[in-house]
Structure formats: C-alpha cells, structure tokens
Length: 191
Image (tube, rainbow, N blue to C red; front, side, top):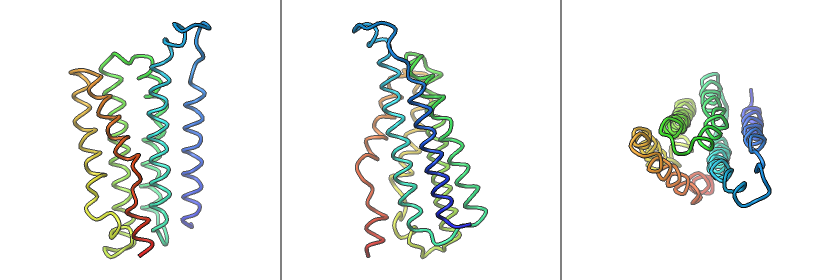
C-alpha cells in the first residue's frame, strides 16, 4: 500500500468527523438571544473540537510528507489514531450539553490524551520503519511540544473533577499552543 492511500483515507475520516460534528449542532429553540445563549456552549465546544481535528489533519499531512513507504504497523498505528479521533464528535456534544459537569470534561480529556498518545505512537512507528536518521526523526527531535500536550491532557483529566473550567482552560491552551504553526517538518524538508 502506498502512503497516498493512508493519507486519503485519513483525510476522508477527518472530514467525516467534522461533518458529523456540524450535523450535531442544534439551532436555537427560539429566535432570541436567550435561545442563542442556550446553544452557545455546544457551539464553543464544536469550535474547539474543530480546531483540534484541524490540527491533527494538518500535522498528519506534514507527518506523511516525511514518509517514504508504509507497512502494517504504520497502518495499525494510523487506525489507532483515527479511532480516538472518531470519538471527538461524541465527547464534543456531551461536553456542550453538560459543560458544567466534571465527567464529560474528563472524558473529553481522556479522548484528547489518547489521540495525542496515538499520534506519538504513529510517529515512533514511522521512525522505527524509516530509521533513526529519518527525516521525521530529524524534524521532531525530542518532540517537546507533542509530549507537553500529552502531559497537559493528563493533568487536565483529574482537574476536571476539581473544576471542569480548569480542564477546559487547559484544552484551550493546548489548542492555542498548536495553532502556532509547527514548522519543524517543513524546515527539515527544505534543508
């Protein structure tokens, strides 16, 4: 199998997940500010999740620019990542409808943590296949940003039971951290 098929399949899955999320959005029950205010939390968590899926799509795209070929291990690692991303629409809606509750905030964090770990596993699997001197290894180095993200998610999950807003703030911080473009792979490919 070529890496292009993996990229195309992954692109399709992420596009479907975004479509599912937008279809889960409900219009306000009334044409008033109160009606709009009632759906605001769901919309805001949709925006956050859209950003996360966009970040994964963007980074996955860059990741596969470093890959020369794939094997079964890479395919399974990629499917592992897509599994966790497929849970984002479910947890997004749950968070939006129960934004003051700890368990939805914690479960959202568990899904983000699992997706982050799955992405790290995918990177390691590709590096194992391509070798320690691979373009990807040179680009990511110790991957401080990826490991910091996983650590922040791990901290946010128990903090959701202290106050869900703390966990939410951490999730937003991680998203903001990744919104600044990660140019490690692009700059390595130019060298």
